[in-house]
Image (cartoon, rainbow, N blue to C red; front, top):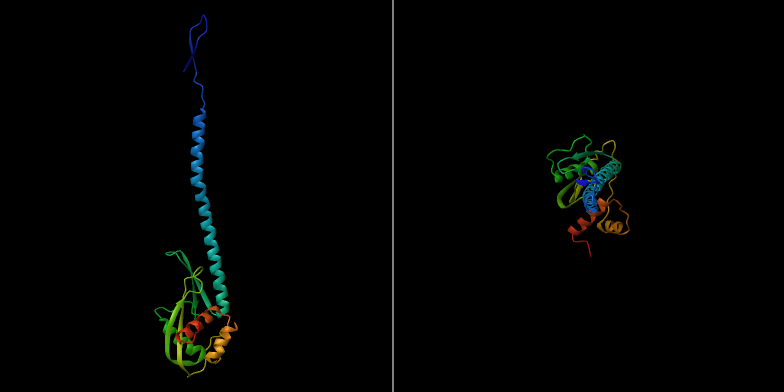
Length: 202
């Protein structure tokens, strides 16, 4: 509080002047800058996470659509809230559900018989690959089937169109070399099969 005195009069008190010093203003600016530096990246990060999630869902749905067209079968898309991922499942028999408890090898034998009419003496699993781990969690199980013979006619669904072609191993190797087989999963399986048979030279 300031006191002002005048000659011939009693001292009187002056009201305190409200304001901030330069140091106080600078301190406030520094605090505001620190808060902004902490808050703004957090907002940008949240926005980035949302955009990334939207792009992931969009890519997953696009992949499922293309897979359904390519395979001519139903494809189911589900959201895994536990792992926060999008799951894409091929519905092979078009019944709207994934066959529970079915082993890949059993499914392989069944599909080979239904779609080709051939039965095989030996079916050996040679590997597992993920078609696209960035957008889906499904896996492709690869098998090498040997000792095949035709035992029945094809039993195709209305949406299936399968032609059985018989080629020698040398012809298959030449087709791979000439890029005649363009389905990436088929190419992958063929190379694994040749490696298993010891017929792949590096």
